[in-house]
Amino acid sequence: MTGPAEAAIGRVFRAESGRSVATLVRVFGQLDLAEDAVQDAFELALTVWARDGLPPNPGGWITTTARRCAIDRLRRDVRGRQLLGEVALLEHEPAREGVGAVPDDRLRLIFTCCHPALAPEARVALTLRLLGGLRTDEVARAFLVAEPTMAQRLVRAKRKVRLARIPYRVPGATELPGRLRAVLAVLYLIYNAGAEPGAPPSTAELRAEAIRLARLLTGLLPDEPEVTGLLALLLLTEARFATRTGGDGTLVLLRDQDRSAWDSELIAEGRRLVRACLRRDEPGPYQLQAAINAVHTDADSVATTDWHQILALYDQLLAVAPTPVVALNRAVVVGEVHGPQAALDLLDRLDLAGYHAFHATRADLLHRLGRTGEAAVAYEEAANLATSPAERRHLAARSREAGPGTR
Image (cartoon, rainbow, N blue to C red; front, side):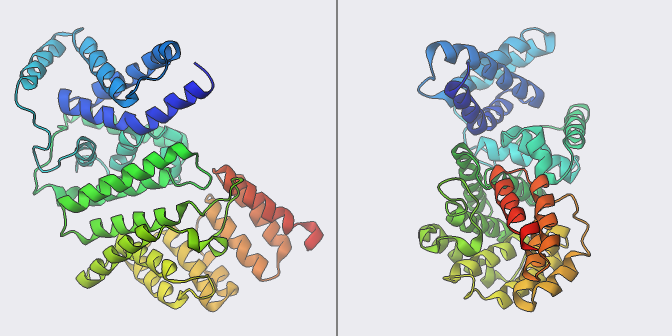
């Protein structure tokens, strides 16, 4: 199968593989079995769909076929045949959808993947791989590490699950808060995986899924302000997403975006959630990021943006989440408040040489300072490191603009 049909299967995989894996884990209780069976189903789809065309319900076809593939695998060994008997008994019980603390298969699997026995990075990476439909290189990019490094992490995480016999079950209500931080990180990264500048339309499904799961989680844990903060952050980010690229796929920076095209309904809902967080006065990273986005949506232009308020919020964010990326974003705001040299001084203290946004930010500051030759080099370095085609094109164009002819 080639061309549009193959691309369609790719879209189905991205949208439905996580749902199918989650369903099979609930039915069979085995992660490796579920993942392998879903892979088998998609391999069959390459042949069957090429012959018959896409079925009316591709996701349902994959889940049904994967279930049959799992049964075929289980029939090959004694323990598998025992498990098949247990599954048959469960199928004759009344429907149990929604039983337990977590009412959604995918959300349940996110919580169970975020088991305390796994390292925090492994929990997030494993769940992104299983439920986000992300390739290993995409997961690696989310963590700013090399693909081989991430591949090793995923192998170790799966081995830990198998050897430690970590149960894939619905966690009790008392266990949920202890796993919440990793779960929120997973949902945020799933959204970001579908939010790269110039991303194809199919990745909208990833963003929609992250928002759907965040809404479920908010209903499940209404007294957790960081859950509310994450939902607000996703909604406010999604409200501006369509304006981030032009009709020809070129990157459109915040200062040049058509603010009248931002989604006013999502903005209103996001702001309402931010206000609810502020009333609780228990600031956390997602709430603070949401508040920063809310301030941006309050302004009708970059010039009228309350940069002092945003800087104050970044000061709080850096205190609770002292990461180099947060420091980089704060430096951008310092540049708006105190000028480009103050921002450049902060930037040059950061160890982010492998991160394209670091070089892009540095290039912008150098350009504002009139150091166009250095800016051209920094833009070129950023373009070489960028993974999004839209960003690479934008940065390469900026490098040419600031090149030898303008020095």
